[in-house]
Length: 146
Image (cartoon, rainbow, N blue to C red; front, side, top):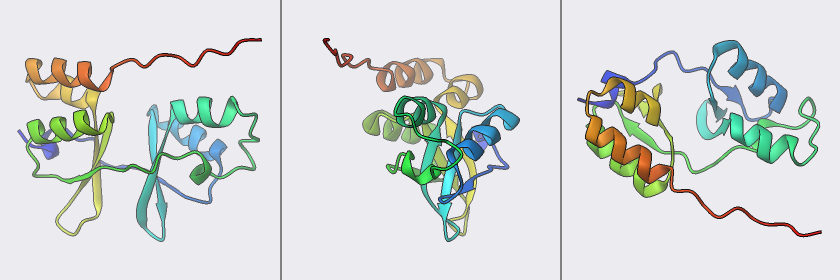
């Protein structure tokens, strides 16, 4: 199986200058947990629902006024649609990421694959369980003392 077999197509993204609120609204409207961020038509980052809560809301940002690029994760992973799922899973494990943008023949974004897509659609239970375990390694919480 390849990424094209499990990817979500019709990826919607936002321009880097669009607001954090617009990112949240798009995620809500589409029932998705992440939005790719583009600058000049090229993907430059990704904003997740967790980014909004931890990097924006927790810091007191005015989500209507602040830009999505201010909270995006920049460590994008983009792989060709013909990449075998096991290779994509290995890349996700190594980078400790949960989403991969999928590119077509002309290097344009044609889809997105999440850990959940691999688990639900790949019929490779061992690979799915291993991937989920490796990208879900918990970190110690930062403890603040008064």
